[in-house]
Image 1 (spheres, rainbow, N blue to C red):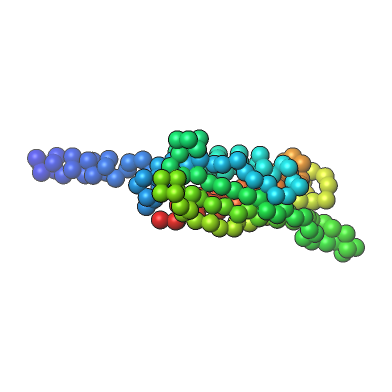
Image 2 (cartoon, rainbow, N blue to C red; image 1 turned 180 degrees about the horizontal axis):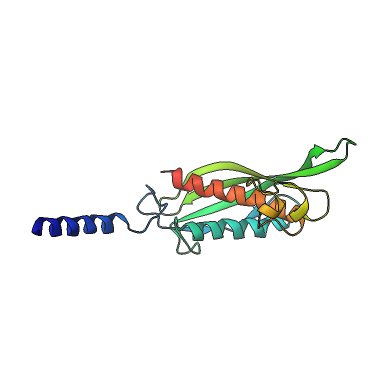
Length: 186
């Protein structure tokens, strides 16, 4: 009977130890525990992209808890994002050859910089895209505006100005790719 009690206690301890807090931190260098997102530089005439990029990247890092997000004076690393291109182009046409769906593409150059060792950890270009109708309501346009495999009534986050939504969807894709690159760098 004692061996059963001992086995149960051992099993409980092992389970408790293996169910600790999960983190995406992976194999990041031990001296890098925080990141600052520098002011986004915008080399385009699309002014809304600057604030959206800064907000979405910062929020994603906070939500995923990869690195502590802080100001540059206290950070171990920083992320420098430069938006280099925003383009709109027709994506699909109707039989009458009118534009049925527009595609917005955003390109950003990103440098993740190790402030302690004074060197870049990576320099890379990222791109994202979003789709929007030429007008109307995106909650009833039969377009997967954010490229998540859902449309209209099945997608609870498709609402608002069509072009702004597509812009945010493209930036969200870039933000996720940046996070993935940071996590996979080491």
